Each structure stands twice: as C-alpha cells, then as structure tokens.
Length: 212
Image (cartoon, rainbow, N blue to C red; front, side, top):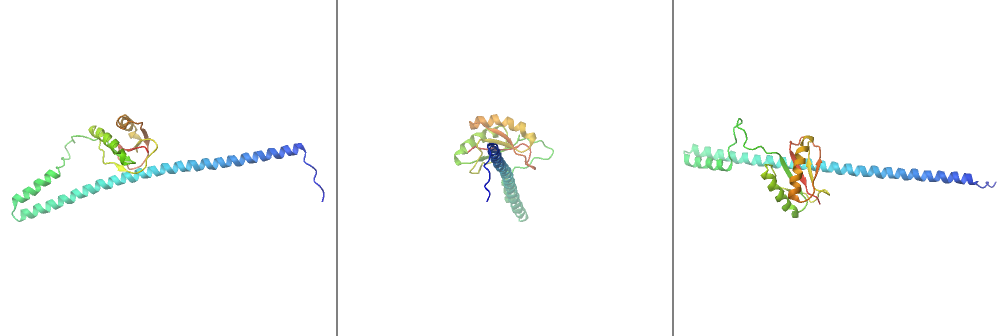
C-alpha cells in the first residue's frame, strides 16, 4: 500500500477553517431551533390566556342566564299560585302573593323610559389566592361607586407575573387607560393594560388578573 504524502500547512489550515465553519453552521442551526421553540411556547401561552378569557366570559354568561331562568321560574310559580287563589275566590291571598313578588322582583321600566343609570362597563376580577380577596374588595367598592358592574371574583389559582387589566375590543383601549389609575390606587401596585382580541365580547368589558 502506498503511503499518503503528509498534509501541507495550507491544507491543514483549509481543513481547520472548514471544520470551524461547519461547527458555526451547526451552532446557528441549533440556536434557530431553540428560538423557534421559544416563540412557539410564547404563542401557546398567549393562546392559552385568550382561551381562558373566553371560557371565563362564557362562564359569566351562563351564570347570568341561569339567574335569569331562576327568576323566570319563580315568577311562573307566583303567577300560578295567584291564579289558583283567584279561581278559588281568595282575593286577599292572591293580593299578598303578588305583593310579595313585586317586592322581590321590581317591575322593569317601560321600553320608552330612559334608564336611571347607564353602567360604564363590567369588570371581572381573577385572583390566584384567598389572600387577594381584600384587594378585590377594595377595588370593587371603588369601581361600583363609579357605576361599574363588578361581579364576584373568580379564584383561578394562577396569574400573570404582573397585574393586568385585559380588554377585548380595540375601541375599549381608552376606557382601559382610564381604569389603570383607579386600579393602581386601590391595589397599590403597577397595572398593565393588555389587549386580548376575542370576537363576540360585549363593549366595555374588562378583566383584572392579579399577579402571582
């Protein structure tokens, strides 16, 4: 077998340079893969938050409709009882039944009448621990005094790294900006306004997510 001639310094330098560039190419490829993975994780997290917000909104809608249905069923029972009393000639009992129903369920204003107060919006609170209930109470009282509708808080057990005020329609950005000052005052911490676009959400609906 014929011995191979030794490599010249120029050949060695060429091979070393090629090896170096191959290593750099592998490194860049690895970094690109890691970068894409990180972007995917961020996208998944944002998608999860959007879905969580939508699920929360639907939960609130279901709860509101259940309350409406319960009220309707109660009124139907009252009407049946009052009608039965009238059919039996018990006018006084029918009057008492209807009077009690009027106390429990105030009559709705006629369509032509203007409402006494128009709520500037609805604000939901998502807290992560029972220890944050006091923060909810402090802010909900202030917001209700301003006319906002503030339903009971929801305990999720998790939250963002920084307290957020989330809004779901681009035109609500101005309202969110006005609320930031109020929330920072009652919470005693910085609050970020975050747009989470979700179709079908009512105007001026917001969610406060307390930080972990």
